[in-house]
Length: 241
Image 1 (cartoon, one colour):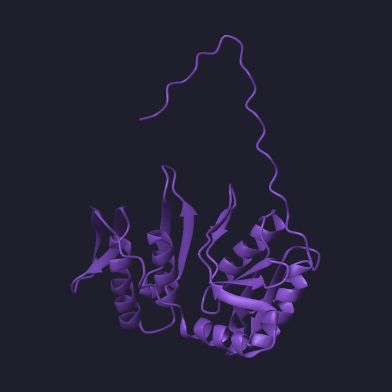
Image 2 (cartoon, one colour):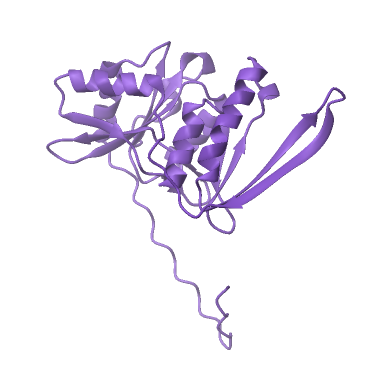
């Protein structure tokens, strides 16, 4: 729950970030600094600071930041780590545009219910995504996830396209801001995923059209893991501690 609250907080603060599975468990999160953006660095720096409590709510965490310190802008490496005895992950907020979309979908006569997503969708060896909403069909129980990428970068969108093309075993719609200059045709119509390119606000009817289309496609089944070949004379490895 603390992980999911942290991911949601990063989105709420509109921080450009990449999430990957950690080599020793957990997750590795890389957040772009303010000087990689064409906007107010002061506002973005404040958003970075506001994300810290959500990081500290995780059971065990380590933070490293490349900073430019003082008037001379001396390059330094800032490190911080900690262990939390307990976490309160209930205060994670949704972005205003996502809350508005839930309200708009609820007001329509539709068999789909939109609720905040709790899942982290992972495709081993490729990457993961953290959807904002899950749409559940009231009659069939079919689920389609929605991730909003309105303020993200083009590489983040292409990474989501790769997830679908490589076999992410879930149905997902990605809402992409028009300013990212990505075509909806970037995802093949037979795959269990779709892009929805919007201008300024999310249209509930347009989102539901993509949800319906993706719901009719079968998600890619996850291939079973191949058993490890037996090696004659091999000794059994001791488990890591």
